[in-house]
Amino acid sequence: MALLAAVDELHDTAYLSPAAWEALRPHYDDAQFLELLVLTGWYRTIAYLANGVELDAEPWAVPFPGTEEDD
Image (cartoon, rainbow, N blue to C red; front, side, top):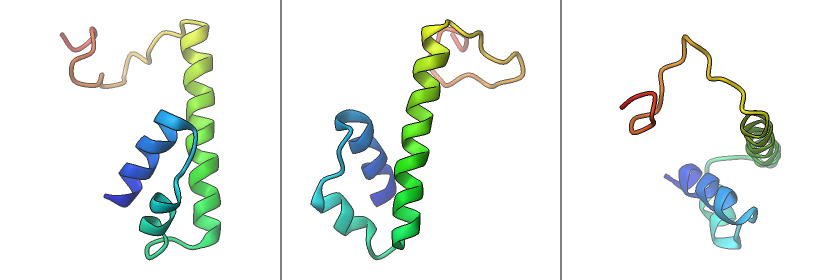
């Protein structure tokens, strides 16, 4: 649950609060913290790029529930 909350916080604010760090600390080491930041940052960068150039979804991909492809 701490990981999902941290990813949501990063998405919403581009910041990870001290409370979020403390919730993650029992589960991850420093290298994994860095990997979390890089992974979430790259995901956001790729999403901006794909959305900005209106890249078509892969035909094999299963759409998220509630998206127009799913309706």
